[in-house]
View 1 (tube, rainbow, N blue to C red):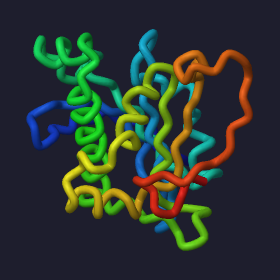
View 2: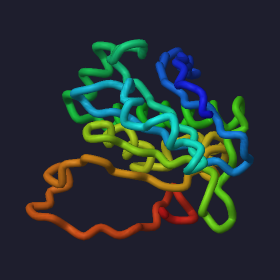
View 3: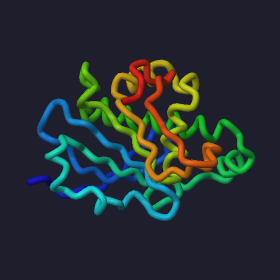
Amino acid sequence: MAQPYTEHTLKLPDGIEILYTDSGAPKTTDYTTLVVVHGTGFNGCTRLCFPTRVRPQYNLRIILWNRRGYRGSTKYSDEELADLKAGRKVFQDRLAIQTAWFLEHFIKNESSPKVTADRSAGGFILMGWSFGNATTLALFADPAVIPKPLYETVEPHLRSLVLYGSNLFWFKYSKRAQFTSHRSAFLSHGLC
């Protein structure tokens, strides 16, 4: 039987703390880690959406990230909020680096598996839920802002990006669009 979720706080290299809820790693060497970043109207305590009994069936480890400014995670500073309000790219760049550091923690300290050669297992699936997409997309926006050693650590573990509950209006689509997988500069292997 799968173990219940546990909460942890990760201190990033810049001192920012991120609260996350972890389902725990399956007892396999090729499990996939689904990292879910919540939207605005709720927080990372969405484990009821990911029942314990489902994880072993799909060989999943589920990490629910509590975004900055939500319970247990560091609030944004006035300077950071000013950058956001002014639309400065530096805000997005910080999110990208913090996301990469978060993933690096699981790679270096928890032996998260790399993506398998056939891309059918292992690695991270990064999922933004509603406004959580702003955080997940930051990682893919400008790979050049990620320091090279960090990039080289994280990139082989990135398997997929899921935009869940995103509003097409954000992307300036006026009607339903058909989406396909794209190659990304960050993912040399492309998206699944």
